Length: 340
Image (tube, one colour):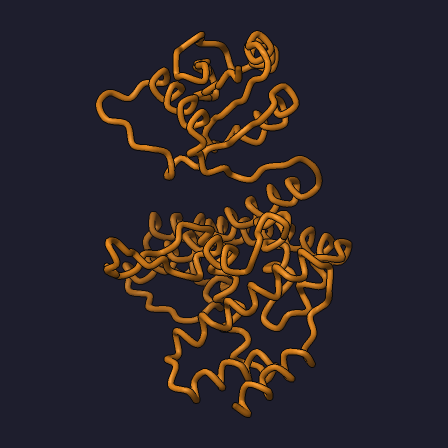
């Protein structure tokens, strides 16, 4: 009989609960979050044993540590777990994880070992610095505006003389420090992008995705880091949902009650929508595809999203098959559909 382990994991302690196939609690324990204690706890559970814990910042470490110790491991996507009524404790959370594992209702978050997850960490850190830079630049401009300096454009972030020219001592001190922070974050961000550029040249799949119009090496590395493996998706429709590029129709008793956004990777949506915007500045077959949709009365936003979905489908195809982007094939498809 299978034993189901629910592990509510935190940086200092973990709460583990073991149930049988009927939901009866066989074991509960609070243990320090250390390799030795976690492995000892899991090994103390009789085989066959399966394990579930939530996606957190220590999930990858737990996955690598425990995946070979159990017959099956699921990393639960927290928003998809059932809502608990009443008090919330680590013990209750661990029971819920064990029960959802037993019932097969966990939405699994994909994890694996190897270079792809090292790339994922690099891409995530680059995103963090990019967001920090945007926030700091906005704060700098807002501060200047609050002091009556209504500057425009990006050159303000390179103008070293502007902070020094502020009259009030305290204001000048603030402006100089925020300006220095912008310069420091920019240098760090540039170093990340040099590293990502080197990776893009050495990974064949990233180079192939870069061939798609609108996809830069930054966007390509993000796609590969987020998707990891094209085999995760049986078709493009599931991939579009993962990228938040489609909406789900709400239907009950044969009636349609509108639609809802698919819960997916908003970062990938930004990548593909950004690529679609870049496509509109060129004259590729994807731009022809956009123009054909517009000529049929499709609105700008919907046509742009259709281009984003097309780019996403091509990216998935490259990751699954290793094929290259074929501009001629897409051009031929456009001519064929235009003739109908």
